[in-house]
Amino acid sequence: MYRFNCDYLEGAHPEIIERLVQTNLEQTASYGTDEYSASAKEKIRAACECPDARVYFTVGGTQTNYAVLD
Image (cartoon, rainbow, N blue to C red; front, side, top):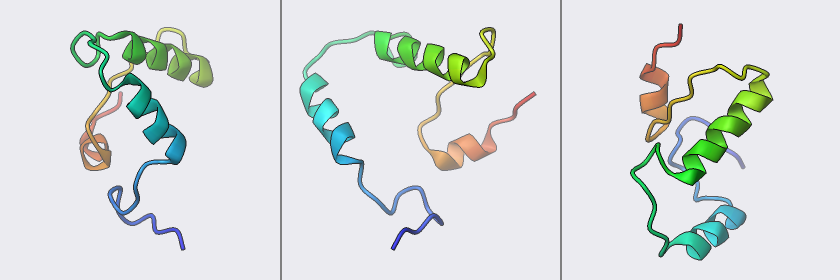
């Protein structure tokens, strides 16, 4: 059964865990300035068809729910 009442009830998808294992020892720039964040931002902009969108990351669903969008 899937439960959507909390962001923290499930573990990560196996493909995510696999990728984390593959990249675990990589040294990258600070969060938000690394190549993975830059790639994710571009993918989000493309999916939203908004190339000038400002994309910010938060640490979890609760924090995201507090974000103000304008």
